Image 1 (cartoon, rainbow, N blue to C red):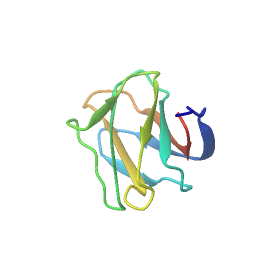
Image 2 (spheres, helix red, strand yellow; image 1 turned 60 degrees about the horizontal axis):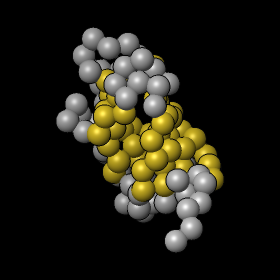
Image 3 (cartoon, rainbow, N blue to C red; image 1 turned 90 degrees about the vertical axis):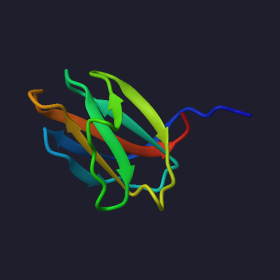
Length: 99
């Protein structure tokens, strides 16, 4: 099996706060690169239009980048929030292919 470098597509972002917010993930890539630009842990979830994130969902550590596989038809949106008392910042979701 050949490993392919991540080929980026469109990027969407969320201004993360203590309330869950969601965004449409552009493109139809089978992977999503998640970039946490801030200094606080962000919790994310993937789903359809009404998806919400909670502090029990997948944590993205400060300043980190992670790539997740997804079903583009089932995981059309991403949601994110930070824990109470944490600073607001942006998290980015880039659709694409590869790792």
